[in-house]
Image (tube, rainbow, N blue to C red; front, side):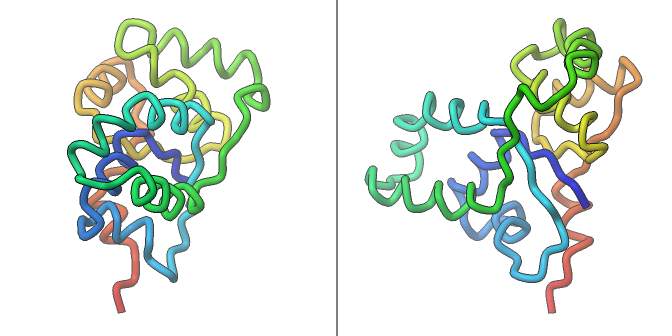
Length: 146
């Protein structure tokens, strides 16, 4: 299953490595293929000071934890998404959350599901008829915890 990961999901996993989100990422037998654009790394870098403060991680610990989670993600260059797909999703996101356009476009491009904890984004896009979201609980229910 192809899953596009929103930055807030990675934030959550990093802040609580015992959470359902972290367990989904780190499950050894997962059949999920996680994807994101490089924007995810840019957003983590933008908020790294805040994340370190909230988590209590040193800079070295922060980098190590980040590497653990991001190595599970395939990063797709934005230029690989066809222009028409990007333009279509820009219309959807421009008045909801333009910062998530890349993630929505990637979801469309790979015909995947979008994993995001952003309730306002979900509501805004659902109101426009776009619903390719998958929840943490849905993903957690799919993994084999044996």
